[in-house]
Length: 195
Ligand code: ITT
Image (tube, rainbow, N blue to C red; front, top):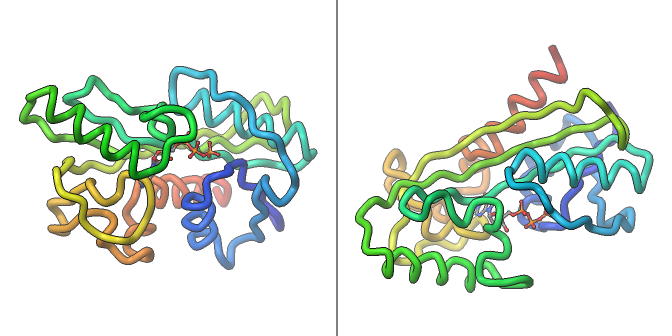
């Protein structure tokens, strides 16, 4: 594969996917190709990833890889989940989403801070591809009340990794890409393509 289109408008995802795929294939984002975004109407990460991959592929005629991801918090019954990007409302900033999550957890009065980032990747060769490649990976951590670190994006500053004694926003981008939900999913995707 020479060229791969990333079916995402999220610059944080593009940066991370680009870094992991560097040297493997040339990456083009759907933005560069003028793809119109599609409503994410699924109820799961997988459904939404597939909706986005098919949409980008239909509009361009190119194979497409989509990433639907988010934060799943046990004490909130899995919220914000597939609504992670718009948890505080349509067009909300990362900071607004993160603050809403912290205030919901505080109000909830539940000590359980276990959470995971989830990433579903969907790859289609064309818009109606009946055999898409689907990969899912999770990354376990705990939600902390203070905001720590400048790296990453989204909920990274409150996602604490006991394995590294820091938040995912305090990891270097290389380290995050090696161990994150997205990094793991992309490695598995590349392995599957090779096999
Ligand atoms: P596209 O649909 O265009 O890809 P999006 O931002 O709307 O962009 P999603 O619907 O998949 O994408 O929502 C992903 C959200 O989940 C993202 O905006 C973050 O809030 C959060 N998220 C996902 N991966 C993350 C990561 O590695 N670090 C921090 N937050 C992450």
